[in-house]
Amino acid sequence: MSSVVTGEAVVLELKAAGFAARGLSVLIDIIAQVILAILLLLLIGNVFGGVLDDALTRALVLVVVVLLLLVLPVTVETVTRGKSLGRLVMGLRIVRDDGGAIRFRHAFIRGMLAILEIYMLVGSLAFLVSLFNERSKRLGDLLAGTYAMRERVVARSRAVLVMPPRLEHWAATADIGRLPDALGRRMSQFLAQAPRLTPSARTALSRDLAAEAGRHVFPAPPADTPPEEFLHAVIAARRDRDYAAMMRRRERTESTAKRLHNLPFG
Image (cartoon, rainbow, N blue to C red; front, side, top):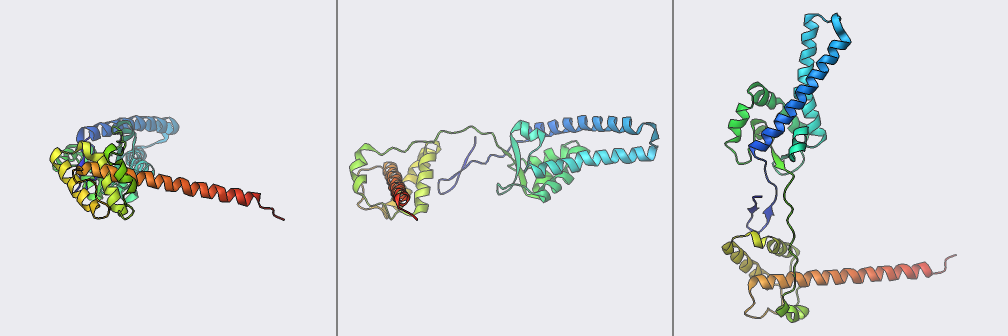
């Protein structure tokens, strides 16, 4: 899975679907629509038999086409927040450009444009437009502000933060309470993503974060401490202290609850 690393070492895990995956999902949807159209037309023929004239037959066929090509896809996409049968099979979902769930407006715009670029032009316009943007958007996506996202991605194991042995004594007495929460989150994100960074980016980011964290930690670690090791020690100590504080609060709460339960009432 390709990732985009921001300047604060935050990896964006939203992967846009390629044209091939989107094409297969559309093909599955079209096959389902054709099967459903045949069943509906057979049903209409059996129910209304010989009572339909040519004009009424054409009108019913038009209703079925509009129902299957516009009403049904827009309704399904709106209700499921970007899904369809084909996308369910392929593990895709339509989302807004900011990653949020789509609404009726987005689904309707996409549905209207799909009639032109997918059905009338046999997907040729959708293919050409997708070549000129990095998220393989078709024209309907560009106008609606949406794109197809892969939902099935390989789960990555999270690295376990361990206190560096040689910094245990220093971390036990260091004052890290002044470390800002935002900086702590950036440090944690960096440590989780560090193995996937290039060596130069990893070194530069660890050095910058260590320098920023060093202004909030006292005393400073030993002079020969590598920046990334210092970050590990600070985050591990912060995690352990937060857990210990949470357990103390839990014990006090349980103790208070027991005392209240034992009080004589009435």
